[in-house]
Amino acid sequence: MSSKILLMISNESHRATIAGHLADKFTVSEGPAPDPAQAPEPQAEAILAAAPDLAIMDFRPEDALSVKILQAVSDKKPKTAFIFVDTEPHADRENVLMAINEGAQAFIDHDIEPVALLNYVARAMRGPSRLRHSQEFVDEERLEAINAKLTRAKTRLNNAQKLICYLLNTPLSNQARRALILSDSTYQRELLKKFLEDSNFIALTASNITDAVALVIAEKPRIIISDYELEEGKTGIDFCKEIKFVHKITPVYFVICTANLDRISTVMTPGNGVDDCIQKPATPSSLNEFLARISLGLII
View (cartoon, rainbow, N blue to C red):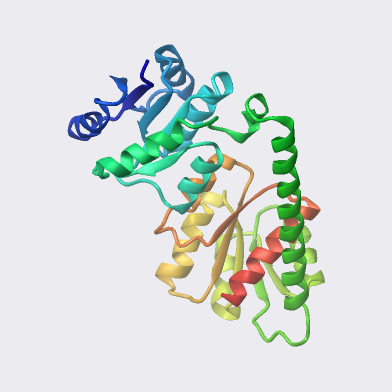
């Protein structure tokens, strides 16, 4: 019995082309493409009802829709594999990383060569789509080896972050250390200010966009850390565009803080000018990682 593939591609021509590449080797059926006007859960139920081995689906970034559909399906049937088709295209670096981390096997173009498509499909069929479900399919010895490698990788990452922080805090570093923090929260401003000053940065603070713009023009900090939500319906993205594209102040490493993970892909969309996005609330380990990342922004 051949493997079942469900095509969820809105463009009829693209759908027909991909179906033509697969029809001789697989059982191919068609389903509705992801619809941003609908919640992800019922769209995931439609996939579960079709019970495919692989879903080849349009990538829609709105509110991380395609990734949420993948998550909902994988929670109930982790063996279902996913390949996203980037037809617009929508997939920037952050979208790709998020989708791959959640278990997508690949991003492909609608005009992919047949041999390349078949290779991606074959790889997707080999195993479980998401590591967090892999205990059901991986023997204990292999799982232990995977966990050991992951622990070593985390240790190396932690050591690398500490090394970066150490190098940036030595007298030998002549990089600019001026940073601006924009937040209407006194607590957050003071927390980040103390953390940066303890790490040998000059920390400037502002509670509103007007004061922040004036400080940026006068002091020219290399790093700007802004809340996502600002006054009068404006966002950190608006502030970033004003600094970089209106006032043309460069070089600036611009970071946005948000508690909403769903916003990260929107924040990091190319054209916004934002260099990094971090999640609130901060923890000691996330602050160390944060400092390492903005320190790399200074170096680069």
